[in-house]
Image 1: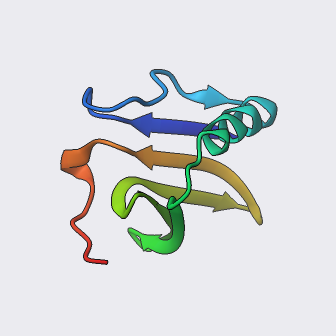
Image 2: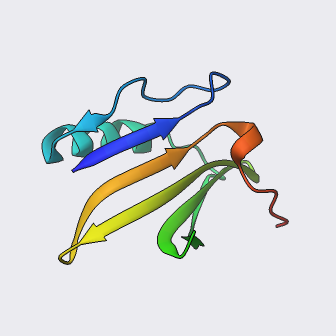
Length: 90
């Protein structure tokens, strides 16, 4: 299991890939611990794959693409760079 994130040097993100199921779980728990009232996670399709859109106070801040192999999640790609996020209307 691996998480790779891209902040584009503009927003915070993991500077190196997060490797291993335990480290990924701790990383995700740390992210969720920072959740604020009004944050929202929606299921979306990212380049034909399952994914999530993360909104903070109504603003799109992260797109997560999920890679599944043999029925298991093997990779999460997080795009946080504002210039790379799609412009979505809510």
